[in-house]
Length: 142
Image 1 (cartoon, one colour):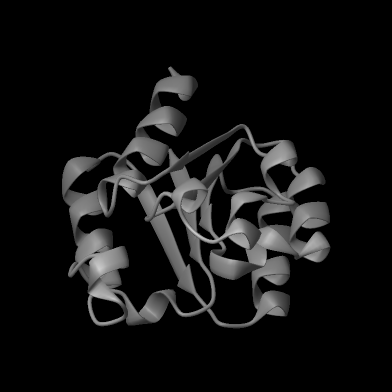
Image 2: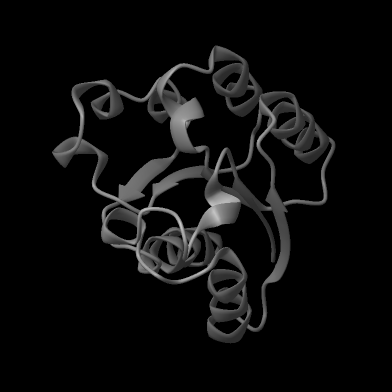
């Protein structure tokens, strides 16, 4: 199984950025945990602060070679219709993931424009959020 894991704006700062909200685990550590926990999965990891790069990677997944996507778009979840449309074009499952519980935070974070075109949404479980999202994709494939 091949899973694309996309991380959006500011997620390269995990482990350092607002640790009370996002924890102290780095993005690299999350990636290492996923590889260890799911040794049969071939992961492609992308982190970018650019909305266009996220759309490009999702469009590339449209061409095949990827069985599922985990996307933590960061703040783009709340306003990027370009990312929403790129996800809607895919025929593979996409899981929206958030480290923090966005529903317990600022009002503007409580609505995602991409959630309706995703297979599911998981959030609020810190770094474990990624494991839960990948588990869904792996179990769905069985």
